[in-house]
Image (cartoon, rainbow, N blue to C red; front, side, top):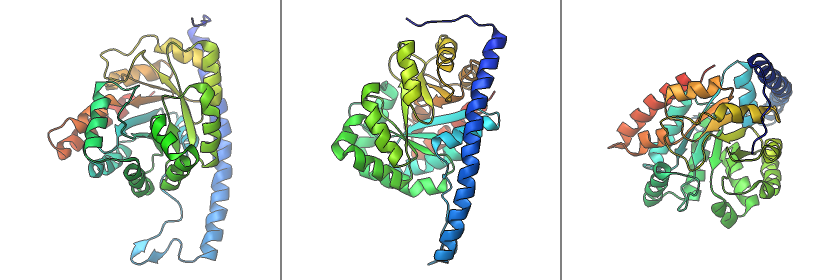
Length: 333
């Protein structure tokens, strides 16, 4: 069972503020250093190759990607500005890959801070019927790992939000962990989330991912013992993904009332950002999660349903835009 320590609301708020402050201060210093380093690097690159930053063949070449910030840096910026992260999820290839490209830009424009992009898989063990159906539609429409990576390569330079690839382990194993991480990093992905590998098997993958500039995000659940949750929080990169319900993904009428307690327990063992997902489908649910102390809100099934279950791709994109803007509005302090 979970170990709970009674705290007054005032002490709880101070703990949240203190831990966030330590994280933001640390990451702000890192951002300042990177900014100065990036500026110097860009200047050197421009001197060595004058074509950088100028027109080549009628197309403007950009020295720095739009989504240059990684997951950790993005979260630091969000918290520094006293905001909370909105992290939408969609499945690549549903209803088709062209719609996915447009959807990523819509989510970015709607205020997504980080975007989870699911790679369709035939046996999505952590997902409920909505995302299972989405993955099946995507596979039937011809989506493959290579096509998804090509899509990320095309879209990532055009959006601000860093992309976190969400995939089960088997496709990674088939490709090889080293090659997979190298390929998605080269395409512009900034993070990786693999829901079906236990903590004990994440350490090597996390090292390989980090070598390629990727944050491996780990999940904690309502049934995770406190000591194990502490190890997960120490090992995760970018943020802690707190699953709000027991079971699979899906739209829920009510968000589990234990979320506040779970956030508090995690907050007692880590100063990394905590984002809550699984079951969030309405603005008021997103707002409740923020009020319970979460640093970010993750939304999947509600957006997947809006996009993939519409009569046409155009109607789906319009519904996605409306739902994303609604949820973005709710995910605020």
